Image (cartoon, rainbow, N blue to C red):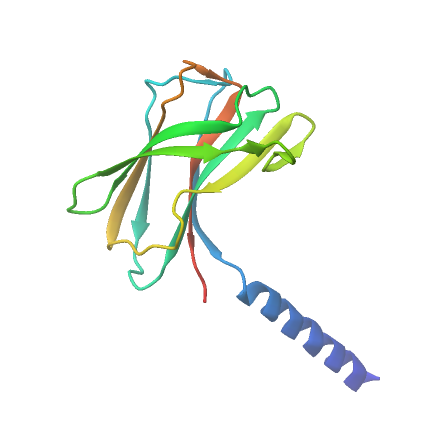
Amino acid sequence: MKGLINKGFGLLMALGLFLTSCQTIPLFEQTTIFPEHSWSAKQANAYQFNITDTNASYKVYFVIRHHNAYHYKNIWLKLSIQSPNDSAIIQNLNLNMADEGKGWLGTGMDDIFDQRIPLMTTPTHFKKGITTFTLEHTMREDPLQNILSTGIRVEKVKL
């Protein structure tokens, strides 16, 4: 009986190890909360994280929490990435948040939706040191209504 319990425990541990070994490891996530549920175009939010493992690849996501009443299927962002000892790289991004068939692409409960939208098509490497991401919205509506929070998530890709 004791051997059967030990085998069961061993199988459970192996299964747990297998399931966790295939996932990415969260490295960093920081958000800005908008108490009035509106984001001014003049408000640039900066997020910093310290890279120590330069051999690793990282996935970068825009995180957003919004009401179902958000008026658009997308969001336009100005993203600035400042790596140590480099000039800032600035990109204008059009990120899809909904489609005709599925509706909102994130997960939701009642009228609140959370989304993690990839900012880069492939994992990338960063220099050692502090990297700063700065986000601004460039939508025509200002302030942008029905936005509860926005931010950046950086995940180390585990192979």
